[in-house]
Length: 368
Image (cartoon, rainbow, N blue to C red; front, side, top):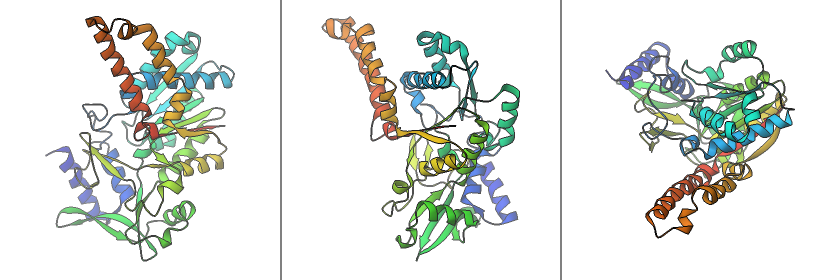
């Protein structure tokens, strides 16, 4: 029996025992089940051999820019020794390796002070577990930077739908042995309160209008604020302000599934074998951070942030120092090889900064 069918049977058995599950609880099971969850089963998920790729998979430019950002934070905090960075949802830890390698060359004194911790989700929802992170804080000391690169989009979300000015929540039920979606009253007043706050005009929206409510992200921000005595929270993810996410023209919300680099909108298919994500409401992160003592320092696009961190200057510097033959010896084999390699590097930067793709990811920095 496949991982998908094993997990589906477990979901079905729970529904038959307890009744329909909120979509948030279903998403939690299929992503974080200790044995067969999408993030916990130990299979490759990121990169060209997985289901999706991140900015860190497109060469080393992203890591170099992150290293420069961390250096600026270290300077601003008075060069603490050690300088603790916790990356949550770090996957294979390759971003840490790239950051360290670049800093050893560019900023050796900072590299010596850097204590970089890659924290993954192998034991379930570690990023939402206050106990896990508080224990780490007691053992190693307080972090100065908490980094979440494409993490918050994977937190379980409640799905809601509007019908005749009323709000309904989407649940997962079973019919004739198959999973199906049904609509019923919201599972908690917090779901309605969240939408009232970030989309007060939802009652006038057309029937069938759907959106995601990420209550877990609020708990996560509260936890990060409790871990930071003096430092920064750096969040990079796809999403936007609430006014853009919860718009009457966005009829089906933002929930998407990724399987072998293909996108679909069928989250009840292949439980545990496909990623399920939703865009991040950065307005909620900013508001919750402020509520717990974090001040917004920066909110911008990934393109603008990478430009601010010198990605185009780095690219041009490489052209002058490593690929001069692409201009000076273009007619030769050596020049043509240099030109092809240069085009490959340029394409990496273009992909990272594409306003229609990764470049439209958002970068949020908050500080205590």
